[in-house]
Image (cartoon, rainbow, N blue to C red; front, side):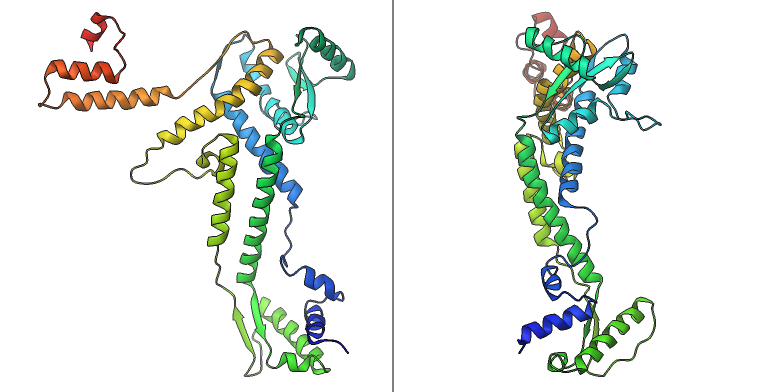
Length: 346
């Protein structure tokens, strides 16, 4: 004889229109269909993060070249009726995620992957002189950061799955059939379940329904997302720690507050981007395009702007002598080692 739980499972299976009771049980944690699988989610999120870092490397690069406009266009993906729509940023981001190597060439104003013969020649150059004027090899086979990010974004996928379930449950109807458990053991259960499905279909179409006085139809409108937000923020914090970038950069949510001006995050962003610029962007770009010199643009002007504001404020004080004001300005603007005549100008 079937147990009570087995009967309930069978009834739930019929209510959902399923013949397989075990499938119904296994689907309970995530009963709603999510259109994106975990692998696709991780790939899009990680490649997207890498692409953003590389685009910021572009913005912080200072360089010149006779073909600068054409070179800059090749940095970005292009979807204008082209079989090869991947730009340099895309090539690098995909290689970083896949932890693979690629050989790229810049020929006649076109960026593309090297042919077999081109790749062979370039590889021989790398063996002999560690670089090639015919192209560049990018190699991320041992790039361990991707493994860490896969773990974090897999967890983020689970958070999104749980959120999707919460939203769908909140939007669902709860149909309570009086004494359903007592009817599971007999044929009346089939009739009750059939009626419940008919009621649900009618409500979906906005029609009136007739139910027993003891039956209930309720909306599950309460959503508690606080645990999901906490989990999400902890994951963002872990990603920020391993990438060396501020949490606001990872989450896309700006730091807020009455006493916050954002300089700390801006400075940390500049410091966090620089290692990627030094180890990935600069060597690849300079070797691939034959750029002789490339510099890194920082945000030190923000600190200078703050110092100038401080000096301007001190100038309005009547409690300091002119000599004390000049001394403060010299120390604030780091003019201690400047020639005496320059200090006098200040």
